[in-house]
View 1 (tube, rainbow, N blue to C red):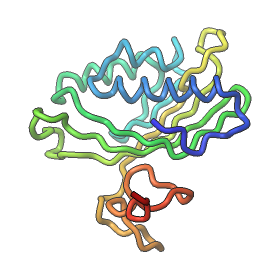
View 2: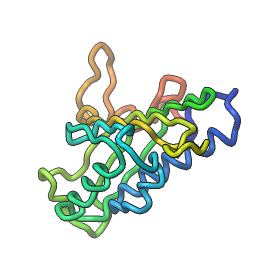
View 3: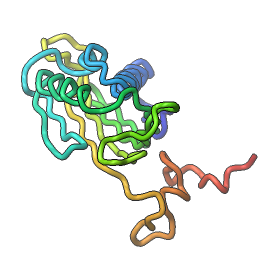
View 4: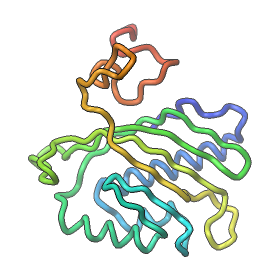
Length: 182
C-alpha cells in the first residue's frame, strides 16, 4: 500500500506503524485469518466499533472474530484484495486513514459465490489510537467503516469521470491513468 497523502510532519515511525497495521488488516481479510486480524485491534472490551460492509455494526474484538468465523463457513476463500491509501493523517496519538480497493476471487478460485458477485469495490475509513486497549501505548485500529463504491462505469455526479476511468486509488493530486507518461 502506498503512503498517499500522509502528513509529512508526522513521525515516520508512526506513519509506518499505522500503514503496517492497515496492511495486516487487509491481508487478514483475504482468508479471514482471525489470529492475524485480532492483533490490529484493541485487546479487549467493546469500545472498538466497526461499521461493516454488510451494513451492520460490530462492537469489540469478540464480535468481530465471531463474524469472521461465520463468514469463513460461507465464503469461498481465499479472496484477493487490492487497496490504495488515499489519505493518512497522524496527529499525536490519533491517526485516520482513508482507502479504497477491489475485492476479487483469487485466480483459479472460479466465481465468488457471495451474492453472485465477481468483484466488489470498497472504500473504508480507519481510525487509530496509540492505545492497545489495556493501557500500553501501542497503535491499534479503534474504528473501521466500510462501504461500497460506485459501479465502474457510473459517472460521478457533477463530474465527467468514472471509477473505470480514474482507477482505484486516484486522488486529485495524481494524474489520471491515461495522463501518466510511459
